[in-house]
Image: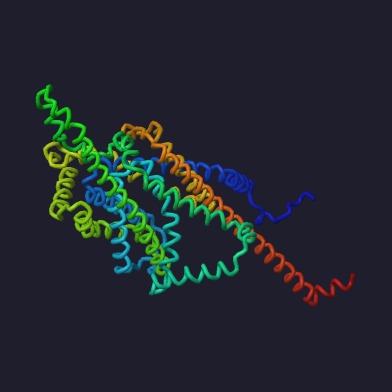
Amino acid sequence: MEEPLLPAEQSPPPSSIDETVRSVRCRPAALGLALVAYVAVGAVERVCFTRMTAKLADDVLFMHTLLAALSMALFIVLWMARAQNGREPIAEQLQRLHPTALLQMALLDATHTILALDGAAGVAGTTQAVLLQGAVPIRMLLSVLLPAESDAALCGVRRICVQLKSGLAYFSFWSWLSSGRWCRQVGVLLIVIAMVAAAAVPDGGCHGAMQVSGLYSLAARAPHRWQSEAFGSAANSSLAVVTLPEQQQQQEEGEGAGNGQRRATFILSLFVGGVAAMHKQRCLSRTPTDVVIFNAWLAFSQLIAGLIVAPPLLLVLHAESPVVTLGRLAHGLRCCTAGFAPLQCSTVPSVAGFAPLLLMFFIMSTMWSTIAYIMLHYGNQALLTIGSALLLPVTLLAFLRPIPLPFSWAAPPEPLSHHAALAAVGMIFALTLFHGGTLREIWRAERRRREAQAAADAADAERGAADLHEQPGVAKHLSGF
């Protein structure tokens, strides 16, 4: 009775048992902290993005170039650090890159980034947070319209017709209700409705929010002509008093039209981003590549693609000639490399104070992606789904009542109109319904997997017992009893 149940060489030491128990107990707490960090960092990242685009409304190519350069530098450093560790070399198959696919992904990503940076300059932060949730139905729609086959559009339309026909033929309300799919389907429909309601917010409703957050950068860059005329002329001029409201109304109408165009550009960037993400996922599924190597080359390709895509896009959107676009990029880079000297930054005054906002956005974006990877690697999809459901209300709270953080002066509170508040509440409800249905499907799949694993283990045990009885020595030993 004093002998151990296992031999000395097989029994685990007490220290390893304590470490295992401690790691099992600490894992839920660590994942909970990762969930909190995912939501908080995601909200701060969205605030930094809004303030950065408001500060550099006319320097879209400059922002894209610096972000791509920072991303490329980050992954090159990771690549070199991993090479210095002396680990096993990466398989040659994971180091192969397809230039054609890489160029396609870079062009799509650059188009999406430039459209998002340009459109966000005229959209309030709260509206941006609501509109970004439209990526969920856009992704689901594109997965049907753009299948992996060659005739993507035609096959996608045919697939929709076939699914509708078969679904109506074998539709059962009670089975549909008990399956739980209705949560996701109704949630997607409500997300689309809330997105349309948020996009239809009149520009006057967001006037206060944009004025507080600095989104009226076009009006703030130069003094208005009517201000110099009205206040520079005699104070007793009745003509100035009469024409001042009319000119102010005309100016607000012009700014409203410009903000409406930027809002349409921001919504268009969601569709382009969905296509880019789907194309990237399919390319990586066909030819797996090392993450660090792939992202380093992709960032370099995005930097080059931005120089190709941005001039014609800005020419179409704002009638800005490519010479002016590339000239602003050159002046911004000269100001940046000169240490933001006043003499070098005189031609681009908006670039002088951009560094804290851009660096904060890049750091927060990198941290957010890293936390999401950790949650997927050590947790599961359900944890990330919960974080996605909590992200929108926390982001809206960050815009309405910003918490004190470094550079919090760049995030003043934004007033929210009644129309925008209703759209935000509807979007939160729709996301809760959609992600609730997703969690239910994840848990049901996990339960089926465990049941299948238990059945397989039971079958293996029965098979082992049958093989044991079929052995001659065992049968003879059992027959002696």
